[in-house]
Image (tube, rainbow, N blue to C red; front, side):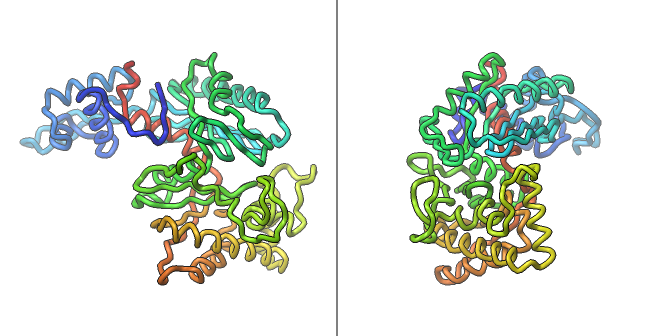
Length: 401
């Protein structure tokens, strides 16, 4: 299966198009009879029956239960999505951990595993090997549940251009061929893979699993080591001409500020990034901490206790974030801004200064809705695994090729 995030699906035949349409309608209206599906899709009952046979053969749907379809009161057999067949694998690479997640076709999490590790000084080849091991474990766990992983999406931090060359300042990587490297390491698994920017995947997860469902345009912002922005316009990722759209962490907010790993001065992530806030209150990355989550929990404890230094550090972060987002809002006019990752955990304290700065810089008073993501730190990994599932829904015939 060829997973191509962001690229429009071009079905080679009407049959392929009809398979995709029918699978989507089944997912939305299940359980539904063949007669109901024919009415909903505009296809003939014979065509629907033939397509259902194909979808059943590849393990995407199954029959189950009795449904009254309203046709002279006669009950019919319901058709449902088969959540026990095809599955998608999401893999996430960060400076602090590696993670894996398996979603079935019903978009249920069937496996989730995270390994805490310091990846800052690891070579790309070392991380690729660790990701491959994590993938093997996830595939084995899925197989034990009767699932077949049909593809994987690897979420990476940093800037990924259209030729899959990765620039990740947090890893000190520049022009690393991320796609080819990871694909090569997973080659023995015969698993098609796609590498994608983590912020883009988090934004897509908001559309499917979070608060962005009704929206066609949104900006998802997450504050981890860096600050990434995933931009969704008309329901699709906006990548820019080089693939670097959404690198919010490198918007300059202080021309006289400290030097950033990217080479510029006063970047947003040096004020509003996770490490900036933690270090501002003395929660530096020492060996005594088990990982960033424990340090964030310590920061939250200080905030809940009303610690002046912690409150000021988060207020400054929110103010800088809001000022930077003002520029993005004026350029793109998104329908909503969703704060995810670390920002979602700090929502009770960072939301107000962020909104205040946005209002202060608003054009004609137009400020988009700012929401806290319910997905928190799971958005990226859900978005990664979810992209495999979306690829199946967009072109189920790919499993026949």
